[in-house]
Length: 601
Image (cartoon, rainbow, N blue to C red):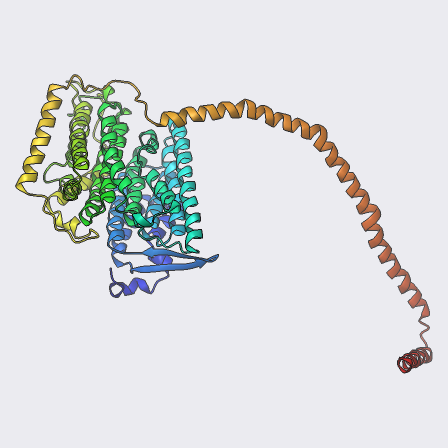
């Protein structure tokens, strides 16, 4: 990724070098591609081009001065590259999974969402970051709304309002940062000892997108209501983009280490008791991102490497799990575990791929989760953070219990010999191919971790395949499986709703709506009546006065001047005799008069 490697692209306009440009143009032209029957080809080609293009980016490009701001649209280093790599790879997988979708609006929203994530990742300043940050929020909202159900519309509005609030907090921090630095908005690492109010506001804005409790409830509220393909994109980009900006700007902040460990436990606790398959996976995003946030908070080279590696691995196995749950929803119309079961013979390939995702997220040896999650736990041990180490280890138990065992068991078996949906079958080939690629990557990274480790921002000196780590992992997973077997009846899914912290803003929105439709509406009606009875009368009186002034004042002056000019012209015309001797005599008299005036002065 040096400039010498990139001379062909260096000759191009900066916008043509930016991978987000490909997705923005593709999104804008998607209706045309659909009409020309080019949709499927474009959905595969553009993400593939972007995936290879990131290897030719210069270290810095796209410097723009705008209204006094210095904006940097392209800044590439090792931390940037690893996220660009997995984001573009995920764009390939997600677009392949979505080939069957005929609604061009979903593809447009998904690609604008990807473009926003790439723009944030490459941004070298806060203003550029904010522009792409808001693009992500707006585009991803449509991936919820396009499901076109009442619950999805409502969830989309809540999602948008929460992210707009987060955007305002981020923007407030940027404004304060601009004032404190005298206009320097360069996005660089902040030291905990140097952090001020502006930095903490920016960090809170980032934390909201990372779904850090207590500002996390938007995620399990919105993701299960997205479209089947929309949820696959959403599980990959918003929280992991937030992980990137936290790793870029705030490593070593103690609050992140503590909150990250709490996240890991909090998310997995809710996942264990959930009934809806996609809601279980949404809570596990909270839990798994907690590992990453904790690693960033610990702040050592190994911890940050572990957070980045786990983000890479998580995007792939979480997308695989959402594709598996989405395939079940697509083919059966159901996502609640108590309504499913007995599908193992009807959807065998979906079963295999989902189980692979489940064992990867659980950290089984030979899978990606084993080589990434353990790096964070090892870093906590090296930093002598015993409390964090125990919390993260306990969260790993809940992960295997809820996603590695409970989720596939109750979808495909559940004690039912007959399928809950007799007509169910494996999803279309494009969906299976996408799941197959993600499943392959789960094993590839587990078998060949050096591929991932070489991309990490710091030099890696970590070996996951030690006798101690293998023994510890197998014991942990084995006893967790035994616990599920012994308590399977207690862990059965129940059709109930589990309250989370979104209860507060749901109830708060009801109070606001009651206030808006009650007292506020009556005040609005009263103001309207006052305007009609008093304000309108004054408006009419003022209009009449201005009309009189226009007619009697302005028109009089303008028309009088015009009439004076016309009268003068008439008199001058009468003075014209048409005889040259009269004109010469008049000129002589005028000249004589001017000479007398000059002499007297």
